[in-house]
Length: 269
Ligand code: XMP
View 1 (cartoon, rainbow, N blue to C red):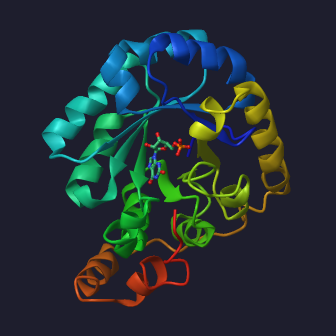
View 2 (spheres, rainbow, N blue to C red; view 1 turned 120 degrees about the horizontal axis):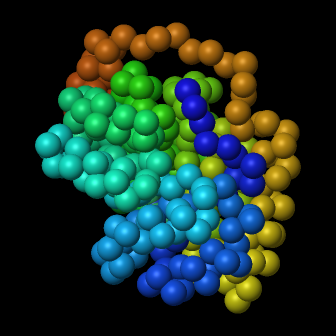
């Protein structure tokens, strides 16, 4: 699996209002970041072409975090548009199911598909938290390049790493503005910490990015995150189905591990 380099561990969430602000920010922080992540607001404001322009100016992998969640025909059109704009990866929701994830991966071709496993907001525990294990298993079984995991719940990142093995990338959000500790998600097994407001709302974004990079460096260097020797057995899709059905009841074993009832469940964000 061809992974993106994690040299600083920072995936910049480029959630600024417009193109001018985006370029001004990138001018200041580009040296501190590994990956640039786009989300809807900037792209809806400026058009998909902003991805193309940013990529020309700052040659870094680009993740289009559109959390795609539709039927395959629509998902795949969005993925195709992202490819044409120059994105290197696209984020899809885990709950779209086996056929849609499989189809997204096929449509992505060389681009990398990341699957959301658990949202970081409190409501992320209401639904996504019940199926985090299944989403991670699905992503691995179907050959996704990576998953998203909640960096403000490092114990969940750790479990997601155990499920997806060492080859897949884990991008962790919920760091900084939402309370996750810088370096905490990488120490738990993540590859990238997604950082937005903690950088672009800082009085001095360049300095903030450099400080965050310094905080991430020790776990990144020590490799505590990767646990590189771990190798998991291939998964049986029937197990996945059985697990899924079990979770339609109130609280199966994995619900207890990942959901509100788990040890990590109650944190306020
Ligand atoms: P901040 O400003 O919170 O930006 O550093 C986070 C970026 O990541 C996107 N994103 C998520 N954020 N929980 C989050 O907090 C999630 O589960 C999640 N998934 C993706 C977010 O939209 C913003 O772009």
